[in-house]
Length: 142
Image 1 (tube, rainbow, N blue to C red):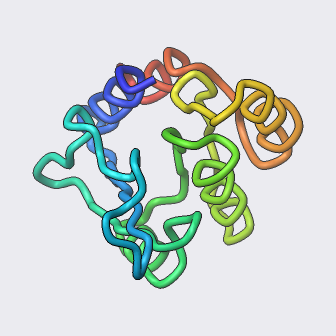
Image 2 (image 1 turned 180 degrees about the horizontal axis):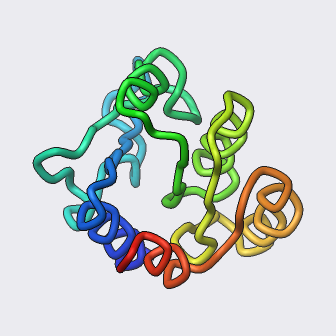
């Protein structure tokens, strides 16, 4: 999954698209929950936007929507951990506020396989385009 996220980010950068790296920080929790830190492979590159979210999704109190709109972004390619938490919340809110949403199902992971499959098959198809990483990379011109 991490390798697929890296491939998506690399293809987006090569296409001149903005890459947004989202990290999670629980307020008032020290140390942070295991798994909340970024793995080194997805560390932001120069030109990427890094967002620290404090809720399930990256739009609340982060300025992300305003930044995306200022840059003319109209499509979100959403990947990462966890399918039925942060990925789903990002897709739901993104769709709700008017973005086109693309969901490469093999570039995300749920805490349980059944939860991942439920989100992909029952929720994501109502919010946007479900595809593979290879299809998303091809669409980016990669």
